[in-house]
Amino acid sequence: MPGEADQTKWVGVRPTDPAETIPVSLSDPLGDINTKKAAPAISDLQAIKLSIGLQTLSGGSDLTSAFTVQFAAVPAGELWVCTGISAQNITDMCDMTFTYYDGTVTHYLNSVFSAAKFSVNHHNGFLVMIPTGYIKVVYENGSTLNNLRTSMFGYIIGIY
Image (cartoon, rainbow, N blue to C red; front, side, top):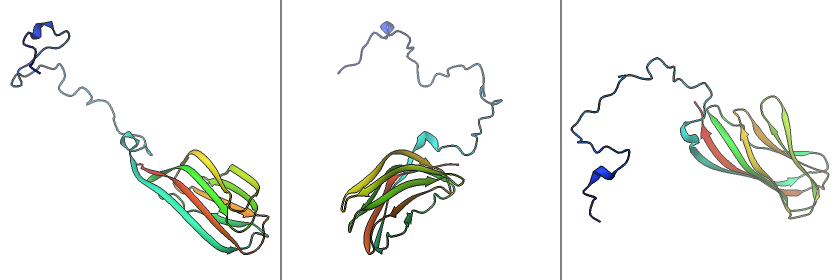
């Protein structure tokens, strides 16, 4: 497609010669403004550093008392965004409780009571996990020798 020859019809655009210097009124307009980000700040554009999918298989677990599956704590310098947690008892029915510990307070997320054998139970949403925070799933009120599958999904964002 040929270019438009008559550029005088362009509104708000002034064609310039690349060799021409366009004058500016200030040489350093932001020089006196503190542009340092407050810590912790989310990395530029909230870029996803890495996707995560963690899974734990626990064979022969005794659910006559509470059996806890705890995922690793979020390391310093990162935020984890948990988009889903799933829990499954392959052997028998039981109760399941999903919690998040943020370093000081345990937050209740979800409970499933008398979950049927083989049913996969979920907690879905966007949970922003801070450093030292972790997810915990507690299985209880079941029988002995259970096979459990616990998973967590999400992504990692760097902080600085």
